[in-house]
Amino acid sequence: MPGQSSRIAVRGAIVSPARQTRNNATMKKVRPAASPAAYVSALGGWQADCVKRLRFAVRASAKLDEVIKWGNLVYFSDGPVIVIRAEPKRVLFGFWRGKRLRSIEPRLKPGGKYEMATLELHEDSELSLAVVRRLTRAAVALNHKIGDPTAAARPARRR
Image (cartoon, rainbow, N blue to C red; front, top):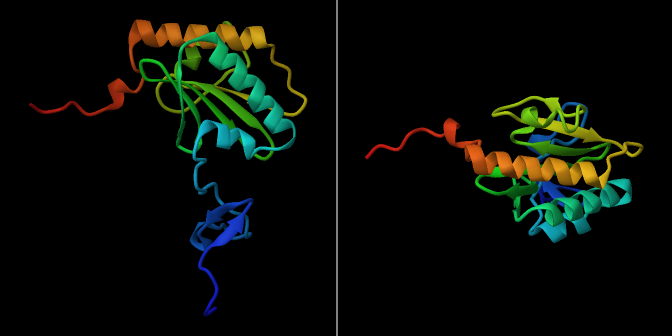
């Protein structure tokens, strides 16, 4: 319609109408948070509490760079290590070398590129901070020992 914006506001984020599915539900194409703190402050309910606890435990466990990447909280140390992604019905806690961490947390579900494995958390899920710390330290140690998990996927540079 003339005079109307070609964008639709969804929970404070802008989504193009072209990104909507047939049943009028929106896809996940939203503007990323400006900072990790903004990401967390935009959350509500149990997801906010869960992400705050995960973030605290991860940051207290190892020296990591925390950034917003791909619209999520991502932690780097010799490459990407951990991702925290809040969604309406779950929080994903993922590790680039997560397949190697299943002995620490068997609920890690392998999938995706690299050695990715993710723990799907819901409102009634339990995960001790001690396990989060062990996972974080082990994931960082793997990156220090083996290197950036995404390096093998990059094309070789020509000289």
